[in-house]
Amino acid sequence: MKALRIWTDGVCTDSRGFGGWAYVRLWDGEARGVAGGERQATTPRMELTAVLRALTDLADIAAPTPITLHSDSAVLMGGAGQIGAWRTSGWIDAKGDPVAERDLWEQIAAVTLVRPVTFVRVSATPSDRHPEGFVAAWSDFAREKCKAAGAFTWAIPKPNMAKFPAA
Image (cartoon, rainbow, N blue to C red):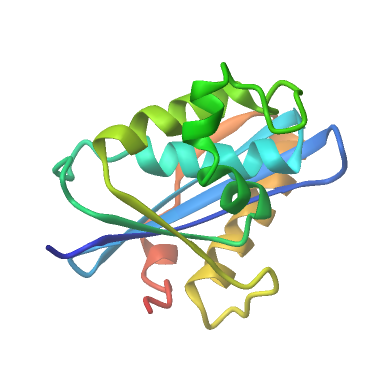
């Protein structure tokens, strides 16, 4: 079965500042994307928000469809393999501390129980010629828009999506 491909990115100005996130999905040759921003955010929260939004905005994709999700997030890559252990331990990490961003991890965990997701690490310094660079540019744009307009979520316009460098 053909896999749905998703690229995500999240950014933040500082430890509790303006944040932006974005995702783009590629299915049957069609690219769609969404970007958003929040105030009082953190980079891990924006990275996980992008993943969660990408995995839950799939009403038009059958549940058994495999998903390949590309991200540069060390938080995601480290945490994705720990979901089972965290669930078993009552969402306590290996150090005995509560799992950070538990609310988002629990929702991501619920989705991965019904949808097969493979997480793939990509470069943290992408170029504009690659899908991860396109998505990173939109998360940066979302962070800047949030500074002026506050929290928001909207679809990336189709003329912009036409420029998506599908890999």
